Length: 126
Image (cartoon, rainbow, N blue to C red):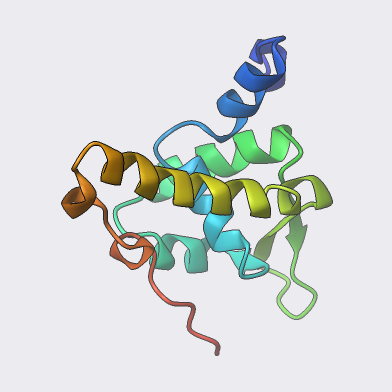
């Protein structure tokens, strides 16, 4: 059964289902920097396995958040990029980051907040 067929009917539940999971929001966050190959994503996201990365990318592709294209300059390379729908999550992701900090602060757990750099490495332009 396709992932899209299992999405809830309520809009808030649907939105959360699309971005929920250990890695989806992180992958989307990284793709906000622009198109990237699978190996670039794997190198930038600390702790993600190639198998899980591919599974999450496929689910995000099925949800219309990312597209997969062959790189023009490399016949072997596949590149992932945000679709317009995925790009529309930029303000939502930024708001979720801010809210996460606010939530931790309100519960006196601000010391448990990690910077994005703890999981996402800088992009190396080659």
